[in-house]
Length: 83
Image (tube, rainbow, N blue to C red; front, side, top):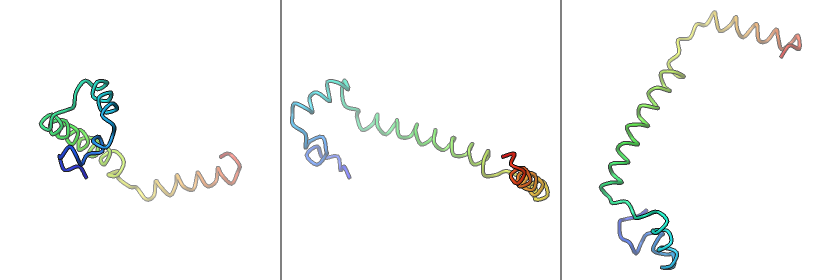
């Protein structure tokens, strides 16, 4: 786990030339404050996604009779070779 110390990061294990190429390609490194801001935005976005999917996929009303009818129809179609 990265502790914030540059000498303990994976980036510090790369040759200086490679590190310079990475920084040049990316423009610059993100500050800790900027990273925390992005993390909060991501957490909010993920929470909204999880809530929507929970409502859509896991909180479906279950009608046992209707489900048995659908299952019976599916089983019959399979046995008749229609599936």
